[in-house]
Amino acid sequence: MAQPQLIELIANLQGTTVIAVAILIGFAALGTALGFGVLGGKFLEGAARQPEMVPMLQVKMFVVAGLLDAVSMIAVGVALWFTVDNPFISGLLAHVGKVVN
Image (cartoon, rainbow, N blue to C red; front, side, top):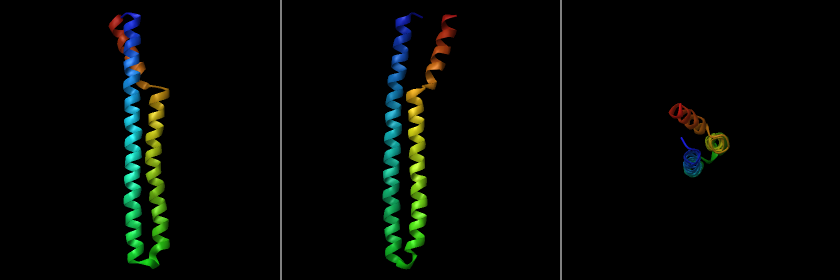
């Protein structure tokens, strides 16, 4: 395989990875926003129905909020891994090496 074709394949793979990373971060943010909206709404409903339970509900709400943030941070970590050290390029280079040999 010629050098310009290899460079074009790697550029296409990196471009596709950037789009995938953007989608991954976008869906993580959207899911977290929807989760916080539902969580806050249910907390307010529970507080309005039983005001004496507010301290216990608030503690549980913050625990779930931390879990919601953790899921989005994992998605951001995976996205940064794909951006900085793309695992698909080594597979592409291995495939190109088999085709050339």
